[in-house]
Image (cartoon, rainbow, N blue to C red; front, side, top):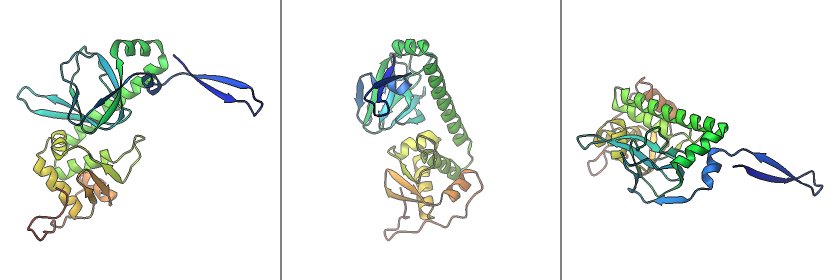
Length: 246
């Protein structure tokens, strides 16, 4: 499979053709689009791994269900991420939509055959899998943090990167506080209290319940690194509740 680009040569009216090998995104671009509503499962842990997906828009959560019924969120998925790539015949986790999502769906066996035929696709897939390993290591670092402040600060900084890993100030957080708590192995009350503390001390601001703006990245980074920060108590509102982002 190749993509063809046609260009005019130096205004002479002659058509020149250059052939470029496809990348993973272009391979998926020929596949059908599927959509999922918030809360809808794309597939379940243990289902037959029939398809590989690429996220086109929206955010999803990947989770594993424990024997006692508890869930552990293992990651959040963004546009460009691949789902369902595994050496196993069954999906290792459940994937649910957090927002409205659009994905491209590729039959797994056909996808594997396509990748096997084209070495450059294998290299790109390997790079994607390395990104997944890095994300798993990031979560392990988060969970190893000793304090709630360190965990939440690291999480916010992790979310505050664009697709090129460049830092950004505005952070979209469409997931719930429970999602964050299950990702960080914390209680929802502790997550909410920690975010409120950051907001009360001017480190972040919360324009709404699904986003934050980082005002003092150096302070947030200092907390994430375990260097600590001198917090003042969160101010009390007229109703007797602490102001901030619950």
